[in-house]
Image 1 (spheres, rainbow, N blue to C red):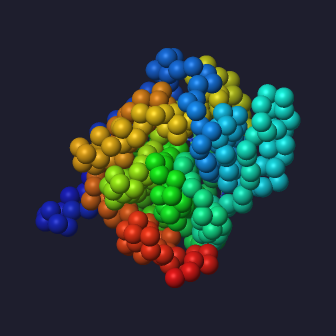
Image 2 (image 1 turned 90 degrees about the vertical axis):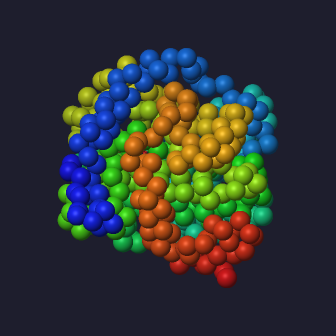
Length: 373
Ligand SMILES: NC(=O)c1ccc[n+]([C@@H]2O[C@H](COP(=O)([O-])OP(=O)(O)OC[C@H]3O[C@@H](n4cnc5c(N)ncnc54)[C@H](OP(=O)(O)O)[C@@H]3O)[C@@H](O)[C@H]2O)c1
């Protein structure tokens, strides 16, 4: 938890969060656990949605937890929903179940499933190719899928990246960039990243995104919190790079502490304890409110525009109680954010000017998938 300083300021390299930042980070985490039900007491459950009939929304990781509830509510409100999932059979079964439950209450739900495995950057590029080839608009991309392999040993993806970093940050970042042509077609459109208050205890070293150098000891908390902070940093640079005229807003949110399968890796007795404190922990229906709010609230574009005009250094962040919030101090570190941006593009196999080219309507070459020149 020390901040390393060198004699020359240009050589100064921060190695971790300072003590005060670390303490403030953990107090945000415990504050969210203890008080989320009070701060969100003004919200209805389920959250009433504005008209969404004209929206096409992709929801990643919608076979479980927050994503599953988000997809179901958006579809029942009339949106065209695409469940982007690694287990398409499970998604098809859910679709069938929801259609049966919905039958007699209106038109059949407009919902489909497409395969997307975030542990494979090839799969991400193939998904984006398939979607872009439809030449249709995309109004909302919800990067919800995520993992928190609590207490587990460090693992790497087939692409060679630490798994939390890949699933929670690298793969969704690649997806967001590659889907820009469809998002621009659907403008005004939104990229919604389901983040976490745990980003407040995260620290990213852009030279050691996989936490393998030995300068920091790996734990699942380090892996998870770093990936969530990296997502905010990347989103903040994307937020800056996307001109207002594109109409594509990008934001992050905290769903709160939610009882989902995210705790599947906890030892059995801890899972039992987790389930015993329902007063503090949100149900999935409560936990998807900040996602649904970010995806559909009509005031979001105005908020995004205000922050852009004010040259705000971080992307919009919505808290679990659906209010604008300020992410951690470290997420405001624009120098690190820029390096995280560059490193991320390098790791996902995109050129540094990918976003600028896509905005201009040019094609970009990605190292993954079968991107054409
Ligand atoms: N629950 C919380 O307290 C909490 C707090 C803060 C933030 N969040 C965030 O909320 C998001 C949703 O989590 P959740 O709590 O709803 O957890 P969850 O119930 O475990 O759902 C996670 C979803 O992500 C999918 N997923 C995991 N790895 C994937 C991969 N390689 N490719 C494609 N999809 C993959 C899972 O698919 P399968 O169904 O096939 O496993 C599942 O549908 C995550 O980003 C998480 O970090 C959760």
